[in-house]
Image (cartoon, rainbow, N blue to C red; front, side):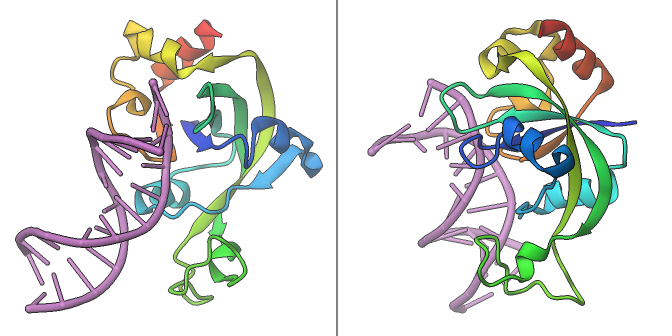
Length: 152
DNA sequence: GCCAACGTTGGC
DNA sequence: GCCAACGTTGGC
C-alpha cells in the first residue's frame, strides 16, 4: 500500500465536502498536470491512503485522510466543453486526462498546518515542503506518513 | 495583491 | 530542439 497527498482548495472542494458526498466518495477530476496524472494513472491503487491537503486558504495544511477506492479511468470533464476543465485535445479515443475515486476516511481532530510541517525536522525532505513545488498530487513515504500522524 | 517557481505553448 | 512569452499555483 502506498501513501499520497492530494491538494484541494477548500472553497472549491474540502474534506467535509468529500464526507458529505454519496457514500463519502468522489472522483478526483480536473488534474491537468502530466506528472500528477501519471501518478494517478500508473501508481495509485485501491486501498492507498491519501492526506487531504487544503491549499490556497487562510491556514493551509492537512485536514485528514481519504483512501483510493477506484483506480484511474478517463476524466470525462476533459471532454465536456461546459466544464472549466475542458481540454479540446482530449477525446474518447485519447482521453489524455485521468482521475481516481477517493473516499473519506477520517478528519483530524485539528487541521495540521503547513507551518508545523515545515517546522518538523523529520520532514525536511518531504516533497510538499520543497520550495516552488506546485504539484497537486505527490507521493508520501511511509516514514513521512507516520511522522505526520504522530503530530496530529 | 504580490511574486517566485514552474509548466506549457508555439515560433523559429 | 531552443527559448521567450505566457498562464497557473499557492504561500504570504
